[in-house]
Length: 111
Length: 115
Image (cartoon, rainbow over the protein chains, first blue to last red):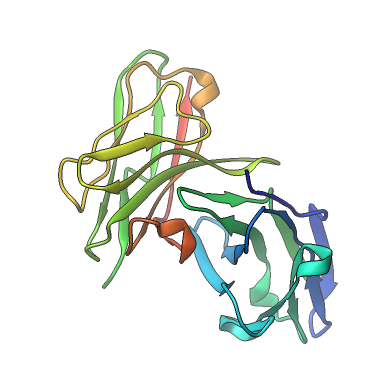
């Protein structure tokens, strides 16, 4: 069965600094990978997804993620973080019947 | 506006008192699912439905029931709630039966407290 690990529970970055959130997955076949963002009191919003093709995928809000099969990773990046990016971020891997989520990484942005 | 609507947003109830959390989507999606979110555990799937009258268990189905009598609605029923079902619940939908392959649209969540 597929699984997802997000090694960082909480990350703090300064506004304007770059960001990388880590995600490692376990899946037997070609993975379908996703990043979601959850703002306080809100549901989850899809940031980006990877199915196949170019391993660098662009998403909404200036985010991108890179799929590295050799490392079983799908890390999320943003060159310059804005205060409004403070939220919880979830990596997920999709299978035939369900989507498995990581435990999440909470991002705090310092002024 | 295309959306998944859950009600209520907040609910406090007592142990053993049956409750239903409603979920409705207006996008004609085939796939619907319920997740619970707990700190440090991420989201775990309770039940899912790939089409009308087709439902199946997820990872944590104990204590929950669902039904899919029509495409747009997918209610979550707790026949006899217990304190360990205190959680944040999300309904999600996707256009195709294998919805987990293309991504979900989520509702805003229902925060349930069982005392």
